Length: 334
Image 1 (cartoon, helix red, strand yellow):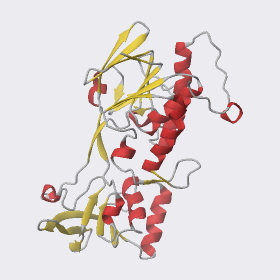
Image 2: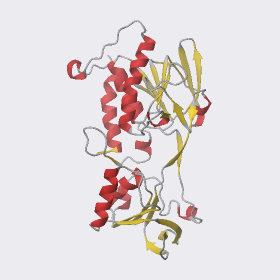
Image 3: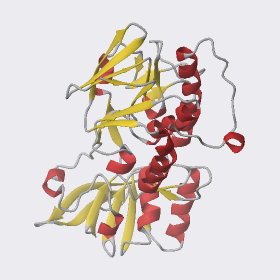
Image 4: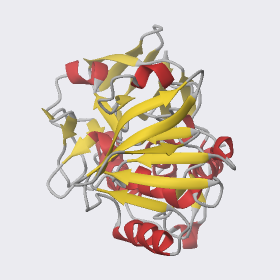
């Protein structure tokens, strides 16, 4: 049995940063994740994707952010159970018992669920022959942008992922066309402005009120048909079609743990991001509350407040005094 102070379910950026904040309070952590390596979506889905809203980093690749977080938490020697899904939680006295699908048993007085979007799969566009070209020119997830160097690329979507990859790939690919069915975008305003400016300069092609209707090719994708509002359809030659419509999240086993759920997210108290079960917290994209923003930096804030509450549950009679790292430095565990 693995015993610790906080069991963290999810090894994404928020789960990893929790180790750091807990370590400052001399609390030990053990992380469980179904993926075989730390990093969550940032490592598994888009390690080369640039991120622009991490304080102190004008731009950092997702994989580099995870590497930095791993270096940051190394002094606190967290434990890892990787490649195993947490399937059950049971209360045992003042502690929780978390068991994985492989039978690994974990024990702690606090649980932090930082599972991101949970179990996820890409949202696919309703194109009849879509499956014919999956893995043959269609990618739902970008792991290595070098794959698209000097290639013709068509991206579809109106959110942050589509915008960010359009901005990034325009300097790598031979050509980039961004197709969006609306005239407005759901992503950050700064990213929208960058795409608009690049389009005006001729660095990419932006097609709004447009949808991909059909695909054509032999052993590999060769062309996509676009339907433009109030215009005749057009065929565009391309090497790759990237439908980036986000991920469809499912909570998986978490949905059966007795937590208050609202639209595939765990309801929390914003005082300390606790759930309806004392001792179980939810931080990052997996939680929901009024005004929730699904940003990594917001997850960092949630983790910071959560560990303060976890400390008080373990040491109810001990005064907790905030100590600045600028004064006390970082002292790991011996």
